[in-house]
Length: 326
Image (cartoon, rainbow, N blue to C red; front, top):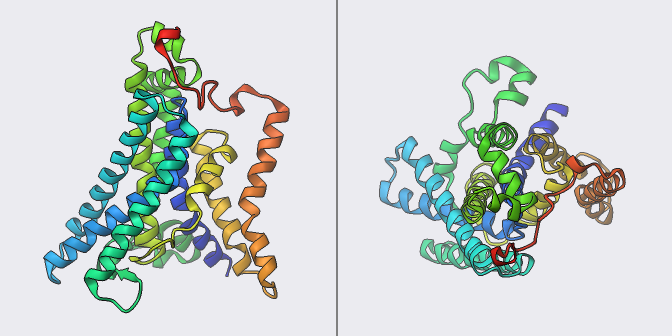
């Protein structure tokens, strides 16, 4: 039972890890992207569209590489386009980041529901959902030696490749941000864009690249949710509040991708806890769903009281940069 609980927590946490890693990279450039929930939603529906078209074209004779690659690329492209829209509005036009992010979330969810509903009509299904079980089977392939290692194998090696990719991306993001010149320049832009600009750093380029890269990573979280957690079944509005939880996880992780790995699995465990505690009423189960947010608030209070600079967000987060004011 403990093994099952841990595996379930990891499965629930991976979409959050993608979303939080993408948001951390974006915020390091000084932009607060509240459009992450919508971007994750667009990443999910873009991957679903790609898988749906390929399954129809393949007519049963599906190639495993293409079955994974097509939805993967579609999710990344769809998410980057959303990131470009956000970047154009907030970096080039200097629109309010909070309002723009909320608009992107509303637009992304609406766009996903529109295409999701259209695909359901194309299938003439009696249920308001699309089942891409053939594609999901390719995404869910686990390492061949997992079963022979017992509980250890089940916990560490029985997950889909997107789970391991999420961890790799988070580790690479942490390395780039802390150990490379690109990361140093990006953090400089997020802390003080005027100083970075005076030092010859292209502020606009770094903001665009960070936002689009963060959006692409977040979009993979939506794809992982559909293909792995939901077993290839798309239903409108089934994604829930995972996008907002990913943003909350950024605070919990103190803007550090490596911390987000641990935090995502903690959030996954907290979200899953109510299913393993017997005798709870509906009201108590709903209270358990609040735990990730409660923990985030506690962490935010503690870090604010300690006032350590390394535990704070970038100094220019949410503030548009006007070069003429430099």
